[in-house]
Length: 157
Image (cartoon, rainbow, N blue to C red; front, top):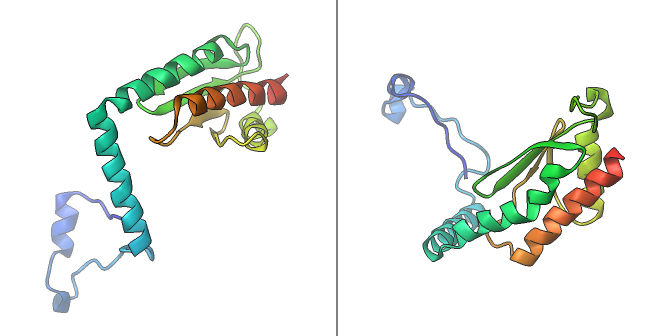
């Protein structure tokens, strides 16, 4: 699926019949891709069902409980959660919580350690994100947090 978003003034500048030459005919090669659309519809259905069942709320609570010990990890600061997303900053482990030198790419090292253990984290610099699917089980959430901690230990100690 794809979308082109803009404000109304720009939209109006391109609004017109096809023959006028004003139409904005930009999109992505995967726009309207049937398999992608089917997957998106299934994801929206799952989101509605998850929200309606209350699982979305308990999912967030499970993530918070599982990741809470990482808030005390000597290489982690600013552990936070927004809905189904958990993020944390890596630091050198000193009292000043200094960041690692960018050239060390410590977030990438943690990502690789986690991937080696079967868990996908998203590194943006030395900020690590966990973005689990709505279908994740509580056991998988605990595994996700445990592997994140193991990967941080392996890459930062």
